Each structure stands twice: as C-alpha cells, then as structure tokens.
Length: 315
Image 1 (spheres, helix red, strand yellow):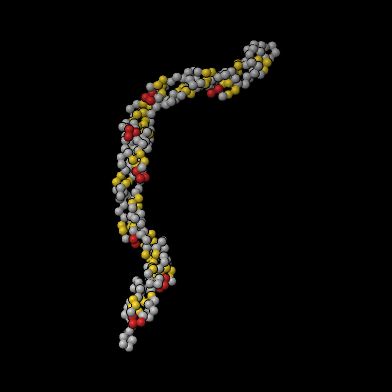
Image 2 (cartoon, helix red, strand yellow):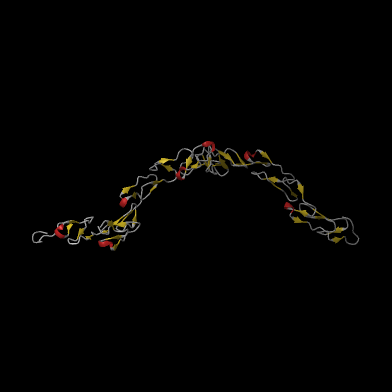
C-alpha cells in the first residue's frame, strides 16, 4: 500500500490496497497477498481454528506427543498430566499421601486409610468411617466399611476393627464363649501363680487342687480307694483292683476284667486283662490268675498232658 506501494499491509490485513481482513485465529499470521493463514504451532484449519488432534502438536500438528497414562501435550509438546500423575511424561502415579493435578494436594486421610490419587477420596481401613476416616464404626458394627454386625452375647459391643468381643473376666474367644486357657485368668493374659498339682480359677486366679491331690498346697495324693477333686469320690473297684487317683478308672489285678474288675476271666483265659490263653489239656482247668493247670483225676504234668504212671491214680 502507499503512493508508491512501499508499505506492507498491517497485521490482520491483506490483498490489494490491504482492504481485506485476515480471518486467522489463535495468534496465527496470514499471507499479505493471499490471506492464507499460517497457523501457529498447535493449530490447524483454514482459519487455524482447530487445536491439534489428541496426541499431536507443533507446526501443522505433524509431531507426536510422548505422554503416558492418558495425558495430552500442549502446542510445544509439553505433557499436561491428568490428575493422579506427574513427571515429564506423566509416567509417575502420585505417591502415598498426595493426589490431584501434578500430585500437589496432600491427602487428609487418617488411621491408615489410603486416598484416591485422582480425587483424594479416603478409602478407610476396617473399623473406621467418615470423610477423613477419623470416626470409629457405630456401636454394634465393625470391619470393612463398618458393615459387619457384632456377634457378642447379650448385645455387648465388639472391637470396631476386629469384631472381637469385649469379654468378661475369665473368658476369651471371638464370641467370649471359651474359658481362659490353662495357666491364665482374668483377661486371659495374666498368668496364674499355681504349682504343677493345681489349676487356677479363670476368673479370680485362685488356685485349686487338680483331681488326685489335696492339702493346702496340693502336695498330698489321694488316700487309698479315693479319687477326684478333693479326693472326695470313692473308688468302685472290686476283687483287689486299684483306681486312678484322678479319674477313678480301675486297674484290675490278673484274673479279672470289667469297669469295676467285677468279671473273672473266661475259662480259657488268665492273667492281666485276661490276655493269656490257657494251655491245659485233658479237661484240666487253669488258674485265672497264674494260668497253672489243675488236672482232672488220672492226669498229671504242667499242662495235664500225661496219664498217671502205672500203679497210680487220682488227682
């Protein structure tokens, strides 16, 4: 333009005498003669009206982005990370305790909860609830998302994390139905102070003698023919049998069997528990205790296997 055409068209104008307005957008320039748009990096289209398609950047959108985890890049190729990721290529997920755009926000979760790396929403540990996971489960519930009901006797509360019942003294187990293990009392952690011949009360810890013992220090065994707690039970064994001082079970002498040693061995058996077989011959009868043969008239020998010698007879 100008009297001698010595001056270029101003920006945003083109053509003869610079009478046409450029239609180029996004700080793009137009050809002073034709008005054709020369797009700035990151834009395409007749009027540079379109941003580069996803994953492309640069002049005429000819370059490819190198971003990860769903991120796109700007006109210069710099990755613009989605919330929850950071790094030059958005290759790093947010570290524990951070979230959001470029992982710049601090999580507010408590009691071991984790937060969503994108939104910051707290994922509570079992036993906790609330926006920050700072509130225990409501009474009567426990566990993951506080969704499990307690199962304690008499509707007593349970631990809001494990569901373990708060047991009365002397009891343990998930539902408080088991006595403390031997050697412990009260909270089932406190050790009893009793010697080997005694047990302790699971509630009070007081020592009492085991079956088969008595006395102030439980050092005395039960007298003969007695057994059990305090040695107060009477043995029921017969025929010289002896009973266990703890259980009362009879130990029979040779020649007898049965719960009370009340049964003699069968004819062909003898000895302890009637386990041995008699070997008497010719109608001889064996002693139920020793197995010794008692021969019939006319026979002799250890097993009654011999006939009386000539000139002898009888037993």
